[in-house]
Amino acid sequence: MPRTDNKSLVLGQTVQLVADPFQSPPEGAILHRQRGGVLLREGIIRQVGEADQLLADNVGIAVTDYGDALILPGFVDCHAHFPQTGIIASWGRRLIDWLHTYTFPEEARFGDPGYAREIAELYLDLCIANGTTTVSAFCTSHPESVDAFFAAAAARNMCVAGGKVLMDRNAPDALLDSPEGGYEQSRALIERWHGNGRLRYAVTPRFALTSSPEQLAAAGTLWREHPDTLLQTHLSEQPEEIRRVRSMFPDSDDYLGIYERHGLVGRGAIMGHAIHLEEREKTSLADTGTGVAHCPTSNTFIGSGLCDVASHVRSGVRVGLGTDVGGGSSFSMLATMRAAYEIGQLRGDVFHPAQLLWLATEGSASVMRLEGRIGRLERGAEGDICVLDPEATPLLAARCSRAESISEILFSLIMLGDDRSVRQVLIMGTKRLCES
Ligand code: GUN
Ligand code: ZN
Image 1 (cartoon, rainbow, N blue to C red):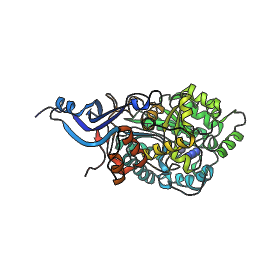
Image 2 (cartoon, helix red, strand yellow):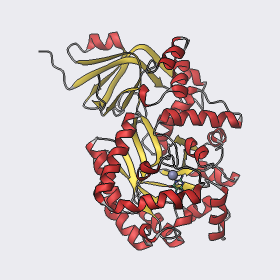
Image 3 (cartoon, rainbow, N blue to C red):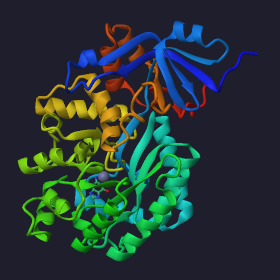
Image 4 (cartoon, rainbow, N blue to C red):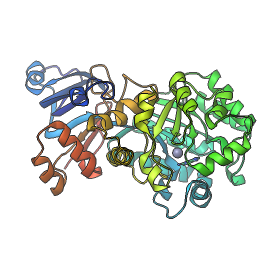
């Protein structure tokens, strides 16, 4: 018997981004192999190359051949709320009203560990079904919700970030904590989960409207004490929110200034939305390495506005893509890239499919400080892979049959694809979907 060394080979059309398509001609950023392959050993990508060569060099190892399907890095969703799975697609409200009508009553249920577990498992299974292998998720203010999320992610060997939401005002009592209580609970959760396998903790003050200055300061202290955790919050999503925040923090010149004052900006901090910004705020985001999670399906669904992603990128701000489930209307990062394209069009910016794919993989990995490890099909990266079928539906098959380039196939999948296009998902090299 030939030695296999726990190796496996996945064959198909490999699509690698070998340069940042926002910094160089996007077409040239794609390295495409029509008959390519990815060699995996112990969950890590060891080689990406021509199928024939890989087959010849690795006689006897397990091979799965996906034919004309695209082999891509798994998608990275850098902003979502797993407890909002059950209230996705709730009608007729805008942010503050939507939070109070739908979100807070649902989140109040997550003190029940059984319910938290049920939704965490459903949420992560839906992510995988949509080709998403990493998320940075808000839990609720209940530690039980964080335990449920990380336990479900560990059972799937997923690389995820998550954190207990800190909120001590302007919400129902059932969701409120206190500066000291929230700090202590978060600290205990960091000790329990952070760095455990592929799990990362994210210090998670919900936003300035639901945290007192004392709580924001406690969150800043916690992050300073655990600098390799992430920090996630919301910034400048809707005008009404900004007006209220400004009146509650009259000493700050702008919204981001509140977070700056409390030590909540820097590399590894992820600001959800960041739509309505002053020039100073953009400069500060870029200078401090603070990331932005662009959440386009949410921004249209709850009517928040058209985020100027092109200007963020030009200013040097790190940008990733988030579904913002359940303010966002889809689990699919294909739908999220589609919405990013459409918002770009409405602003007069035309994003190339390589740029959209970059935001959904490398961009999100970078705001999560995981670049090089995930979001990349490259030797040494972790083996999180998504296999997309360009013939998954009659319409996709018809459209892709006329495509003249890999960019055109990619764009067709972005515009027309959904979970039906996800043929397989590998997490650390292990297949996670049933194959018929
Ligand atoms: N701002 C504060 N909390 C939330 C939330 O749960 N969803 C969105 N979209 N924005 C928020
Ligand atoms: Zn959000």
